[in-house]
Image (tube, rainbow, N blue to C red; front, side):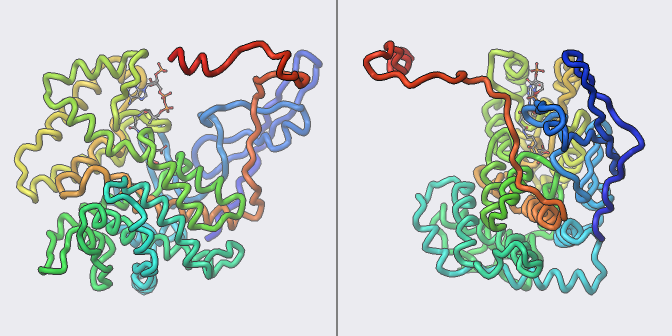
Length: 450
Ligand code: SDX
């Protein structure tokens, strides 16, 4: 189903320039649900004015039918289906189909799609040599950025973005190969042999097998842990126009190939303010080390002069509990129970930290709640996933969203290259000065004075 075109509302905003008496009618456009938008497409042409919105706090960069978030209500839906229902009843492969094709698959379509993905799980054997170019201790996200970007050198037959068939093959390849690439990054870091994908296994079971199996013995994993892994990927699948998805869209708007665009998304996700937060949460909880230290860390989080932030807390859109965080919290308890981990010190600190923060007026006033990253790391750590792999797992789940958003943008009839403008605050025109006429304002003094 193609997204219905947004409708112009019978409503306009009038901008009045009291300096020259001009006024500009700004049309209002409405979507299915959520805030209406002011269509400022012609504002610069008509008024010579730009809008200014660093961080895009009030800006809709595109129209999309994939994911809807209501930050005040704590709502997250994919193609109209609530995330809690999908986490409870669906599986990651089905969610990938839903994001890509707008509808939940019939049993026949699901089986076809599942087999399509399975037929792309291996990577070109030549890529093994690319891993050898990295230090064994390289961060897995550095390897993911490099190897995913390099896929365009191997799968050139699915880089023509104007060919719908090639777009679909590239989408399947990326969803299918991310677990293989991530698991290989882990095996490379510990000097163990790579485990090839096993198409007898489900997507998430195959990933855990490639991560933890060894050639010398049979590997089995508890089905509850497979379900937890699959739920982790569902909860990370897509999230509207977040930083990494916007990166993928902007890269894709220049008609760059899909592998390069997803590599750009991985790079953006790596940041600790974004997908790198799950790794940062574990580091923070480990540093806090005891419930007795929580108060001093909360003081630091509230101190304007201290760069410390409570990792896993706060969100640009959610000013209520992130619906994914509550599912993650429940999954946390399930996984620890299955693994017979009676009292996980990091979980104890996390629960106490959440309890104190949610009753602290600073966090209440700024509407800071736990986000998707607050509990996810505790689950992954309990499952034996090393901390530096956490964001790589986020990237596996998010690839479904990135590639669906990329496909939606490419298929938009009015696709334009993304090219924002700026508010220029630099020097006005000045003439070239010969060396002898320049006063000494050496930056080196600044460097040396540091
Ligand atoms: C993800 O966008 C997405 O959808 C992202 C994501 C996805 O699925 O793609 O949901 C995944 O990235 C989740 C967020 C993970 N990041 C973290 O947990 C890092 C910690 N959180 C913060 O860095 C922050 O909350 C952000 C980056 C998530 C959001 O930042 P905003 O929206 O730019 O808000 P802000 O930094 O302007 O904060 C508003 C106020 C500030 O105080 P004032 O300047 O108003 O006085 O709240 C404060 C901030 O100082 N604040 C925090 C805080 N987060 C915001 N203070 C302490 N601890 C925090 N975590």
